[in-house]
Length: 119
Image (cartoon, rainbow, N blue to C red):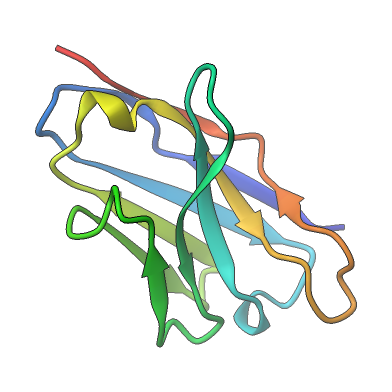
């Protein structure tokens, strides 16, 4: 079955960097777009970044453009989120997402990894 496992979260000071990883299992990773979402306390979950199956196109939320980079390694079934110049407002639980499509009728989600930006 589809499984997404995130790692790399933690506590970082403002201006610092973190790299999140998400390893995927149970489907043909190289044929699926992948996304990162985040949910801050008291707020709705929001899309942070998305990457196409081949990694040739990406989209970002306006709030992270120029600071975050999504990438993937299809040989390792892994998608990454490099986060630079972190701000306190980036504090959230970050979720890996496989969007619905093809024979997959629902979105799939990891359990999330907490990123806290604080001095």
